[in-house]
Every structure is written in C-alpha cells, then in structure tokens.
Length: 387
Ligand SMILES: Cc1ncc(COP(=O)(O)O)c(C=O)c1O
Image 1: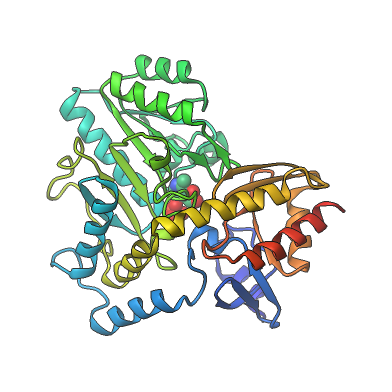
Image 2: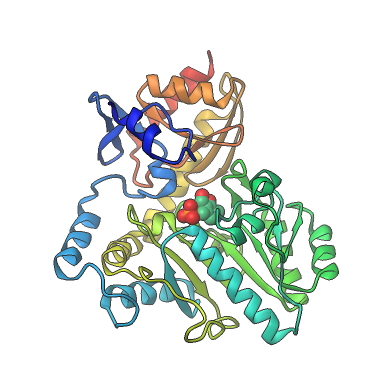
C-alpha cells in the first residue's frame, strides 16, 4: 500500500490533504516522494519561519536534545527560562505560560481572563467578546471563541461565555461589552483562517480603548500573526496598543510544537500554583529552538519581512485574474478569479506550494524567502491566475 492509502486507512480523516507526499525539506524547498521539488509558500501553515533544516535552529535543537529532552514543569530548566526572559524583554509583558499549540495558548488566555473577571469585576464577569470571522483553535473553548458558526455546528452545546461582534464595528463591540458581563475582548489583528482579513488600525485602537474604558482585558491572538509574520515581532506592536494577554505559537517553535500565553501587568499574577499546567509545556528541546528563532527576529530582519510583503503585493495587485491582495507582511491572501483550489492545483504543477484561507489563496512563506524566490513565486502565481 502507498502512504496515501495507509493514511486513509489509519488516520482520522479530519484533513482533506493535498495529493502531495512530502518526504524532505531544504530551506524554502520541499521534495515529494517522486523527487519533485516545490517552492514552499506555506511554511507548514506559518511554522517553519526560517524554512526547513535551518542550520542554526537545527544546531540549537540538536544540542539540547543531546543534553536533556524532557524533565517536566516539576523542575527548573534553562531553555524555558531563557525563552520566557527573551519574550518578556522583547514585549514588556511580565510573565509567560508555555504549552504546546495555539489552541492551548488561547485556552490558557481564556481561563486567565475568566479568573481575572471573577476576581476583579465580580461573579458572572466571565464573558469574552470575540470577532465574527475570527479563529482561535479546535478545543471546545477555543471553538466557542471562534466567531464562525461552521466550527460550532457539530459540537453543541457551544461552551458558554462568548459573544461575537463584527470586526470594524466599534459601536457593536461597545454594545456587546455593555450588554454582557465581560472579562475581555479577544481578537486577531489579521484574521488568518477567516480569509486573511486585516483589522484596521482604527478598529484595533478602538477595541483597546473600549477594553480600557470598561475596565476589561484585551487579548490579542498572535498565533498566526506573531513572530515577525506581519513585519513586527508581534503584529499588535505596529498599532500602539498594549494587550493584557498575548498568545503565540506556530512560528515561535520554528518547526516543533509550542504555545505561549504572555501576561501583562494586570494579568501577571492571575494564574497561581495549581490553576493551570501542561506536561510538555516549556519542553527544553522546543524552547532551545524557539530561543534561536526569537533572537534572530532583529529590527532589520523584520523590516525586510515588511518590504518583501509589499513587493509581493505590488507584483500581484491588478494582475490578470487577481481581484485583490489582502494581509500584512508575509501573511497574504490573494483573491483570484479562478476558484482558489484550482489555482493551488495549478501552482503545484508549476512546483509551488501555497494554501487556502476561505476563498483566497494564502501565502505564508518562510520569512527568509529571497527576492529571487519571490520573483519565481510571483511569476507562477500570475501565470496560473491569468488562465
Ligand atoms: C489565530 C489562530 N489562533 C489559534 C490557532 C490554533 O492553533 P493550533 O492549530 O496550533 O492549535 C490558529 C491556527 O491556525 C490560528 O491561526
């Protein structure tokens, strides 16, 4: 049996996989079982931000693997302390909780917000207002936080304690915050799974202002937008807002699973001993790799991400068969005249891998993609969209 056949036989069919069997990666190149080479514009859904087999990251991971793979949170270990310190110094936030995925990071943020609401606002102040079209994960609480009915449908009853508002509707957000006993507002600055929909600076500032005036928390989900993806270390940093909780995952691990919830001044002491935990959270090997990633996201590197994003946008905007290009930095959504799935299949024939977000072609290339590789990608996208 082929790998594809065994996959269909043994794996829960939660993913409609592309008909590609990846066996190896090298930088921004992926290779399938037949030896076909692809330019990677997906980075494993925004994870491999320095591409595959990145020498520095691999060395950091391998060195730690040779010392200690796992100890658990019952002990002190160096890599997780180093990573937490690096994130705190970089953001001005105060404390970090490590877990293993974006959903878990958001789950942690939701728990912390509920505890904060109860302690600071009173009984019943547990509601969190999230944005329609947003996406926060696949666990029961994060599915409930996800403001899209299609994710709720099969899993009723939806976990209580969430209200939804249209992004860009500041009045609606204020109404929702007033009508419910709220602990927090939670949002992404660019709705990734929702179709690469950026929220405007005006709305983000208004949301921060509403949270402040109503004395509730602002949670920013940076799972997809974080780690330089939009051209800032965390995307909220471009908008002069100061969230109380920031969640991070994907690119933070650079290829290994990690999640993190970062807590600001008001929330630093909410989660106390025994209130939350994770066996693998802060795993030494993952954290050693993540320290390497964080250290390389210099201001110069980040401004290059922004420049490359603009370069792709300019090269694609207005091209034949392309309706619009949305997003920030190297998190881009291309609305094509042809159905996105057809464009993705045609791109694979051209040796380029991209993914979908709703009805758009989504580009999340490794952040160290070169200008030559961008030219190759743009040529292929323009060619298949024009058909
Ligand atoms: C904004 C956002 N939050 C949360 C998640 C869930 O992350 P994970 O799949 O690591 O649980 C995702 C995943 O795509 C995401 O894009």
